[in-house]
Length: 351
Image 1 (spheres, rainbow, N blue to C red):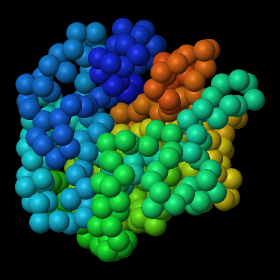
Image 2: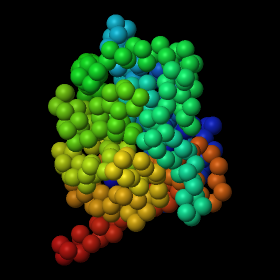
Image 3: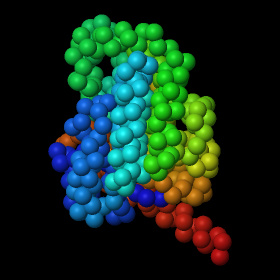
Image 4: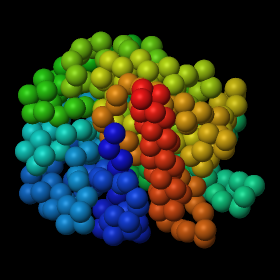
């Protein structure tokens, strides 16, 4: 496996120099953030980003994310032009040596949390989700959630949600299939592996359908275009926010099929209602057996990209919630330590 670290560009308080000093991190996961959604990423902009990253001794082979325009998810007539733009972005990324593209197909709302600074017993803070808080929100009065994307003004959000009133689960599946049939052949030809990120959290939000929530959804998605270029970003924290999802089994099945191209590893503490908060990466700190998850990747001979996902804010650090330096660095070293221990134990068992 290849250990990577997410970086949000020059405005990120976590610098490439910081990341370069984390033992075992060999690559950066990033994106072009100043191009409007739906427009093609210029090849020169990609090259400049790659050069900046590589100048710090780090590889740049994974994009997270190339956003999918809402018109594609809605199945509007404009989608063919937008899919063509997306396909050209993939060609430009491939020409610059990028190998994996993470994306999602969540309507309107990307990741959703009700708190960005839930205080844990040790004094650290973490992202959290409370079912009751979300269920009590009246969309007609607007959204007031921490971290909510303010790119939509209240009137724009209301109009967008009205468009989704006619989009049920099967319609969204059909629109995803249309998108995949348009871009996967291009990705395959260019040598790009597409890796869809699951819904976060894996449940309907505000009456909008969510279709990448569990094992059956993942299997259905891969069957839409059954080729290695159509793959997964398996996020343990997102899928693990549903206590019914067996992350170890998912890794064994889909990594075993060679269809996990990118892995997000983090831990969550979750209850049966679906409330959860994020924790330190260790198995003992959350509801997920991280050691068993890493073992499943090892035993599947996983050679793809892994990154420590969201971290707590610790040691007085301030910055982008979930994306500080210290706890994610601890997570990277912890995951690498698990991998090394499993590898050595496996070697000894064979000798």
